[in-house]
Length: 125
Image (cartoon, rainbow, N blue to C red; front, side, top):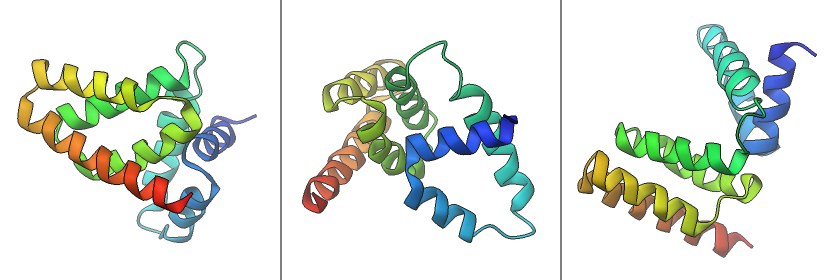
């Protein structure tokens, strides 16, 4: 299996078919090289590795997104925890690390985004 195909398989397993289908439908000639890059590198290499669990990857990813201020992707990765196995407690622990090592305001904002996303997920059940 190619790295791209493995990446699409992993991406769908973590983010869900609906999310990936939307991203694919919105792909343009301009953005296609970028979409291929993240599919092969992020999903086909990093997320596809069996070095750590998907639960642990979710926790690390959420902490890194919060610590670097990349808040727009936090809801997507919170929704992915339904498939990766990271619990609400796991996520709070990750964000507490963010508070200590990267700043309370970043962790606070990430927690607010997580709470809102969990509420949306629970309302949709």
